[in-house]
Length: 119
Image 1 (tube, rainbow, N blue to C red):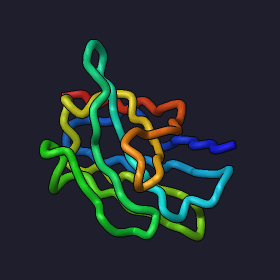
Image 2 (image 1 turned 60 degrees about the horizontal axis):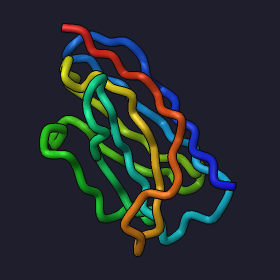
Image 3 (image 1 turned 180 degrees about the vertical axis):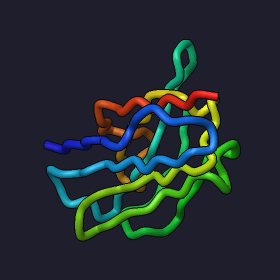
Image 4 (image 1 turned 30 degrees about the horizontal axis):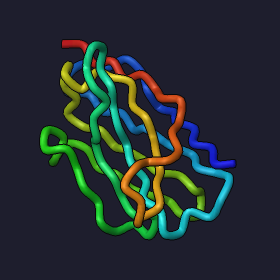
């Protein structure tokens, strides 16, 4: 079965950087899209970034453009989210997810990793 395991979260100060990792296993992900989402307390889960397994077609939430970068290492079956210039409003649980490129909804989700940014 598909497993997505996030790591790399933590507590940092505003302006710092973190790199989240998502190790994917359980199937061949060719033709899939990998995404990062986040959910802050009392708020809906929101899309942060996505990338095709091939490495192309990345997209970002407007508020993270220029600060966050999604990338993929196919050899390691791992997706990364490099987060720079972190702000307190980036505080949330960050989730990795995947869907087939032709699907609308993300079918598989990780357990999440907490990112806390203090001012």
